[in-house]
Image 1: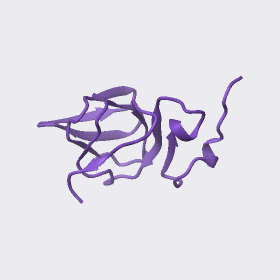
Image 2: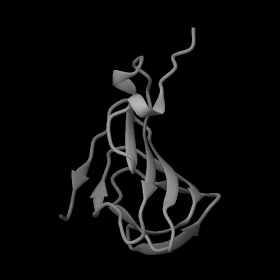
Image 3: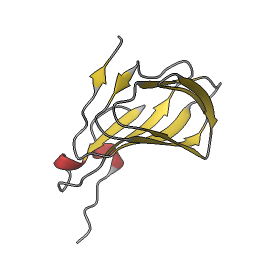
Image 4: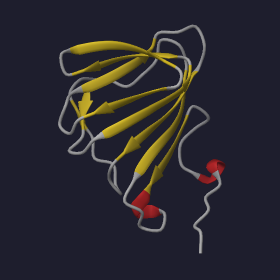
Length: 113
């Protein structure tokens, strides 16, 4: 039987909803459904697993390790495990993206405020 979750039932806010697999049928994946306003984004951090970003609309500028890359809609960014990374919406509109954590439970080590 399928396990179905209503987006609005996920914890978070209008700008970001969180799905953690261990809380939802013990699935081995977690993700954020994100709508990031211009000028916003998380600080530098790492995870002990890959993180995959699917940019659906807008423009995000990623720092991944020593590299900085600007990504527009319909692109996918893969960050290797334990690699410092962050992003900022550098566009003029809300950026819509899905941030997939290859783990049933999110584990984040913050490297800056």
